[in-house]
Image 1 (spheres, helix red, strand yellow):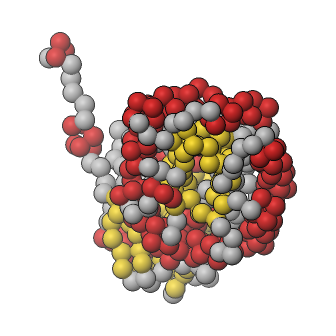
Image 2 (tube, rainbow, N blue to C red):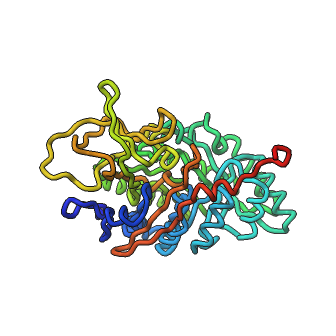
Image 3 (cartoon, helix red, strand yellow):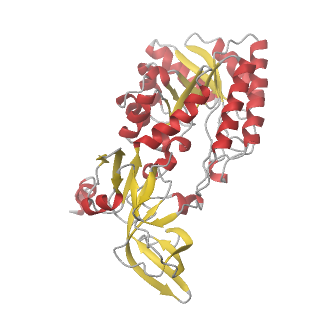
Length: 422
């Protein structure tokens, strides 16, 4: 079901008018739909409920406490990549027994904290990391549950910068080296080998990429068991993509969950998946106001108050997001193409090019950028010394600020002039 819809030409999120929010709060700001997040989770969960499967939300996609709490109440676990994400997940109500800790650069204090919380498993990325976890566990007289992340050398991902499963990527251990690592872990009394892990990338829309990777993990897991290792969990990672256009991808989702069920049937192990973008991307929009309209030669620009500091994906990944007017102009066929740009002093601060909008668009009109619930706010910065913007969560006809704006004065308070400069 769609929750961002036009009613009487005005955009609504669930039962709340976005124009009403614009009258109450300063733009730009993020808006999220609770019900869309719940629907997205249930779409996966209902398809997989007949197998032993943990859906561990990739917290890096959106780490807002209210978003995490919404998913926790649905029964989600968490895939974290820092102590900060671990702490937020636990505060939001996700049980440590449902948390996996991924990432290539876990620091000693992060490993210690995760051990103390007794998380489900560490997804180990290298031999050195495995030895460090063992050493820390020994010092704390604790046992670390571990799974080794296997790099299956599969090309996948919607952009080279979000591919993680090729042998040239920094992630995981090659299968030929992993056997020795598993042997080391088995012989160390402070390590408990519980699983196999993999993750091949993000924004994947080809089922063949998953099929290829899953088949390699099935083969590797069976090879491990032949050498005497006991494997309980198989973490298949995340990566399931979405269509950033208006098209639906329910058929792809069905094929994806069918493939997971087939993988489970071949292994008979607990399956862990780590969706992030799929659960929250289309549950969020970024609302912005038009500052100016301008024309350089034959190029027309709409300058808005949201910049790449607020939403990095177009600048970083050349991501394509639809941009639409908050209030539809009825019977207006007088359109033109505009580049939608932000206020940041970078040419890369371009949200979209050649967007068709009404020629009647003017300063103080409102636009929104669609499907920004994943890798939006979490990647924001204070570049050009700009405030961190607000986030609003909607549930039916209720709405609430779930992240406050950080004012310039508060940013400046974090700094000081060195004593010798006074």
